[in-house]
Length: 181
Length: 176
Image 1 (cartoon, rainbow over the protein chains, first blue to last red):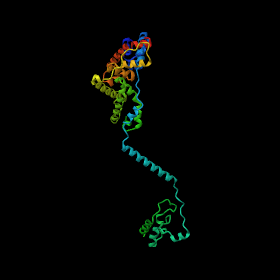
Image 2: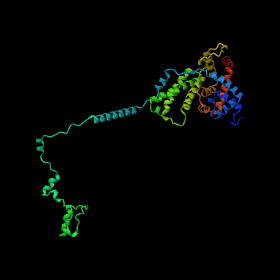
Image 3: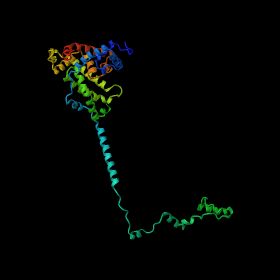
Image 4: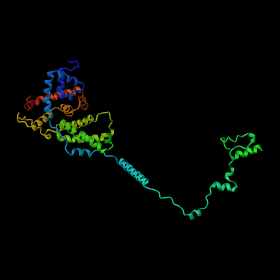
């Protein structure tokens, strides 16, 4: 027996069962059997005898499938379900619609803005905002409600240069005057 | 198999292209009848199509599973064949030996095929799986539902029988 456990008897059993081709030997014993083959002339003689039988076995007729068999088998194969095919068509239709929309968006250009004749502009009259209309009803001008910048109250000793202070609103200024009074 | 279950035609065709020749070859050797092998192949792939939806990846190798399906179909046919009255059974091949030195290539093929076909059913199956299909001994054991040691024993008996029966042929062809 060799250190790897392969004996000539076991080697003979391998040949008897699996033949001379190491590819057919069991994975776990292949390396040990090949090692024995390298160092034993008797192992090689037995291997050659087994190879002669292998050569005969390889002459057995190989049966090839007929040319129509594959198609007959495939005719029985499962088909894609109809619901999936319908879904595929819907997906294709949505894709086509999206592509058409994109193409339209890329190619469409709006026309130049229309210009009005002077006579048409005159018919439109002066533009008045809603704020203008509300203030004119109480005889106020929006510009008049804005206070002057700076401070003119001598009692609080304002520094005219302190313009970074928050600007008082119109209502704050009015309340201030009432308190002062 | 998942793609086959979804009805993917390309996956079905790929599966047939990869396995059909081996399936037919295996069935022909187990049945010792090429004419029945195509029927078995068709039945085996019908099982593939119906089993695809319930296929669980990782549970079994597809090749091992397919061989087991084919073997079971072959064994069913062999059992029915045994039940066939002798009058209806096909004529056995002519066992008359061909004189040595006059063998053509076709004769060698015919004789070797005939001798393999005359082996006992289980020896023939083990030889077909390990020698001709190139499967490992543990795969053959799983397909046949026996131990690895039993596979090894069947193979050894098959080869011993064939060596004896083919000895004149080997002497003529190989000078052995």
